[in-house]
Length: 106
Image (tube, rainbow, N blue to C red):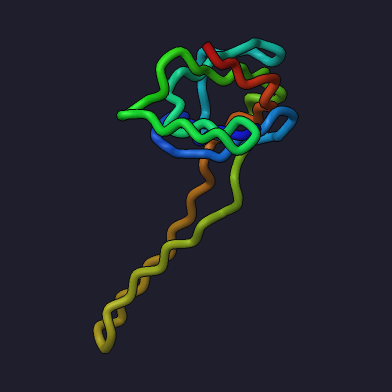
């Protein structure tokens, strides 16, 4: 069984036991449980339910493993040719590591 879920503005394909890195949720502590009710698609042994926009009564239960993760560094380089202008900037996104405990169907 798997589901397509919207978490913090991004869509993920989740299954029970799968670990995910989502955008940081500052209000959660390590070991906390969080439920996501924005289930877009649900596949239960070949029976597919597509939401309009969300599947009613379905939710995904996750547990926070770590709230202090950071993503890989993304380098942004700006240059204007023949002008001597060069600028380098880097960014690391703050992330939350969660594990999917279960997918609940109403």
